[in-house]
Length: 137
Image 1 (cartoon, rainbow, N blue to C red):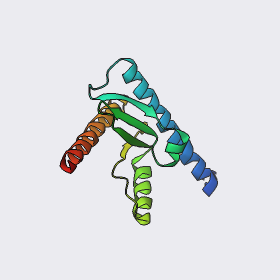
Image 2 (cartoon, rainbow, N blue to C red):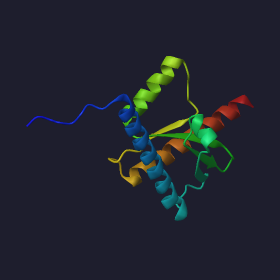
Image 3 (spheres, helix red, strand yellow):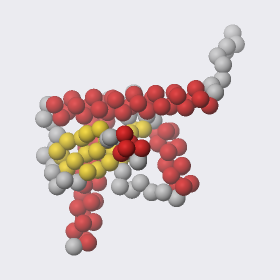
C-alpha cells in the first residue's frame, strides 16, 4: 500500500518545530517546578526562572540564578538535530553563545536525566564564571 501522506510544506515544517520547541520548554519548566517545589535545588543555586519575551528573543528560554547572583542563560532545544542546526546557523553568522547553556529536552530522556544534566551544566558554567572573574581581579 502506497503512503498517501502529503509532503510537508515549509510552513507546516516550521510550525511543527515551533510546537516541539514549546513542548520541550514546557516540559523543562515542569521539571524545574517539581524539583524546586520539593526544595531539591543544589545549595549553590537559588532557582531557575522562565525568560521574559524580550530575553527569549535574545536567545534564552530560562535563567538559572546562583547564590552569588550570577544569572546563567539556558536555551532549550527539542532534539540533538535542532541543537546542531541552531549551532550551525550561529557559526555561519560568526556568533558565539559561550555564555549560554544548551539543553536538549527530548521525550526520550527521563526527567531525572534532564534535571541531572541541567544541574551539572549550571554548576560547571558557574565555576567557569567564578574562575574567569578571579583571574580578572
